[in-house]
Image (cartoon, rainbow, N blue to C red; front, side, top):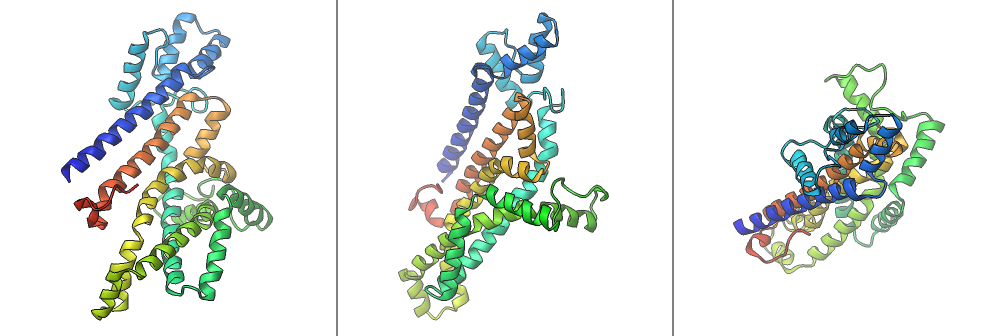
Length: 337
């Protein structure tokens, strides 16, 4: 088991190293990329040529006039040893990218984590009821609803919600994290206003994501209900609640557990579009702002952060999967994904 943890940890480290290496390659070799664009920008501003390389190194953590190996070592050491992702060139000039991301990230995580928790709860509850009443009107109607919502891209539903509930009916705010008249702080008014402003982005994610997981949970539950160990449990006279919780639910939820952690990375990427639609100031909106003015350090910072979130999610899923499925500790089943 120790070898398994070491193997997965090693794979995570190698993956992160590869991601940062790809980011370096994009910064250094992309035609018309960050270094080239920044050099052209500084030349237009009549910055002396001997200062241009220093400015590029300041913003991108890469000295374009140094040998390639030195550039690579400097870039990797800045990220892994100092945690530096460079500085913003345009949207918040000379502000460290880490500060920009640290300010915006909690708001994006609020939207993403709230959505993940809510649509998984809905998936488990509705999926379990659909399996329990398999073939009933409830099962048929909810299966159809789940399929319809799953087929709708979240950004399409987001536009519909903004148009109807935001602009036409003025029931929900469009834009900002909280109202201008609200004083930030640990007060009930502030917390409720934050939830109010995040309601539509969260609803867009929840409504379009719960369906596929509810259908998955329904299928898993129906399959497990027919297993021999469930019949044996019934013959032993165990209560329905104990069978549903410890025999059916625990096994049926395993695929959802992996998806729960992987959703973090996937939805972080999705916020790029979602926050643009709702004008919600998180890392997705920062990414769009940076993209419009070619602020490459911020773009690369968001790219690295989203990728790291996905890799860490897979890593945590692998390490904890054996806690809820003991078969993996005995080698009866492969990894979580």
